[in-house]
Length: 539
Image 1 (tube, rainbow, N blue to C red):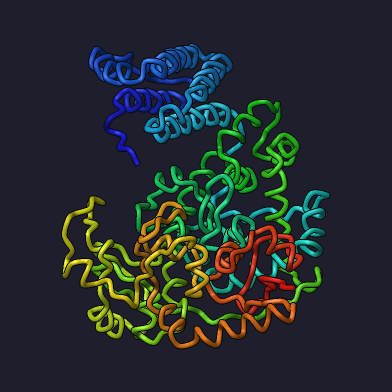
Image 2 (cartoon, rainbow, N blue to C red; image 1 turned 180 degrees about the horizontal axis):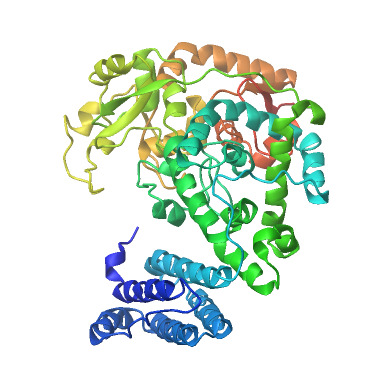
């Protein structure tokens, strides 16, 4: 992410608006905010020179905010709100795709203006409800529709999500209690992601709490080539709590705050501004004007609360509990494959991946990292890791992300042996190589730092050690079995393992996602451990 220090004009404008907020604290402001100084103009000059087109809109937004302050000083809140609305809309016209390094400062600035708009409005409204107040268990036609869906076409999704929730909810509930928030919010990830730590949306929201990168950054979630803390259940929960608290402080009630969590506070603010109502007590009057996805989001969440509070009423039978993954942390200082480490420690396959979903490459990073390991196994891991060779392409990446010419222990030629490297032959693809070694293409891409699946003849492709051993031990039997199965025209099935996703399974067996869903009659992309899937039908 780009640092904010480069954007002096934004900082000055934000400071101005913060001063404007202090004037908005009462209906009769006491202190007029100061005008911009020559120092501010000097700060603007650097930004204006760099972004001449964007600067025009920023200058005008600044002027509108100054006018809003003057109107407020004169007791004209209607005109003050109008000018702030114009300033907000003007900032929306700046194309962040054209100026990508302005995206985060603009988002922060829009959020600040949005808060001022709402706080001017709310100064005349009733006091807001306490942050620990329970979420209203509304029952209306919208909630009933959501209940029907969960009892019908979405029941399988609900059950799979509930099963995953058993692992994470105790931690979430504890954090909510410590923050003074209602524990009903612990069910929000069921709607957001189905409690899937690697859930990725078309809007590029990631993780159990579905943060986009910029919002995650704002609430302290780190992201680099090796880790993405949006997928870390505990850190993402901490960030979600901060965001939810801020939204509740902004809107004053939980239903509106939840709508804003889904579609952004700006969208909800625009709807509120069009309503001539006391929005603090009438969320459902906003319902029809919210984005379609958000309009159904709040009823879905309330429906979930009804179901979990009274499962028998809605024909649900939940398992009583699930095994909790207790862990401790071990400090790792080199990059190793999690699958290699699992093998060296004789751990169940996938246990380290499941404990550390934030590791984007299924490998530890090339800097000091607190790896979660099964409780009581810290010393086992630290002993095993000493005997695992650090991958050469990983070892050459320093903490600043740059590649060096040397390796930390030995040359790559010494580290690459005939047993863990495949030399690409004519006609081979990444997918065909993955099938040879019974692994998925995504693993090979991450292991080799590939950005695409394109390969050249003679290229050396590193292979996961476990898959190489499996191929050496059972290649003949697998080939014979495969030929026999194909000759008989039967179906090939696969039992879903922990850490699998429908996408990774489709890549593993070289079938499209849509074909895999059609073969198994799936209506969504959710799968669960132990589920038997048809992956191919021969003959």
